[in-house]
Image (tube, rainbow, N blue to C red; front, side, top):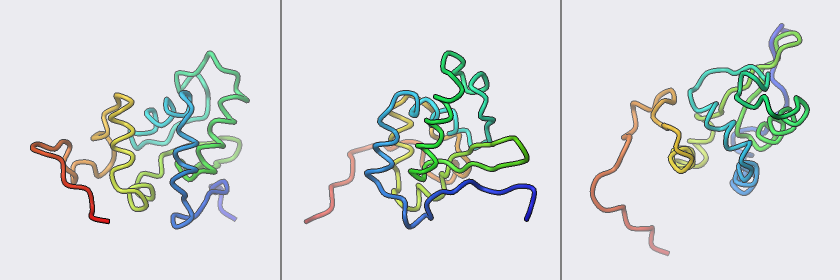
Length: 132
């Protein structure tokens, strides 16, 4: 076994839209999403996440909900845990969802890895919805 391992999380194909949206329906978890949008790994310490007003167990609960929904991944290194956004997996399952959520939350979605490959904004009318 390696020194680093991942905590249980759904496979990309198993990430469910309703579960993701439910997980992000809490203001604390949306705050975590905007923190993780920079593409870096983050310590689980509440003070590193701007959540020092919350108890450590409460922050841990919110992180577990995000991980079990498939929004984040958690790497274990000894006694430390490092959380990062599963942007590639979420973009593959639900194209544009993260960018829309981050824009609605006022976070710059273009800071994510690979975001330079996507248009950061659209000009002109929105595309027509698909025919049913």
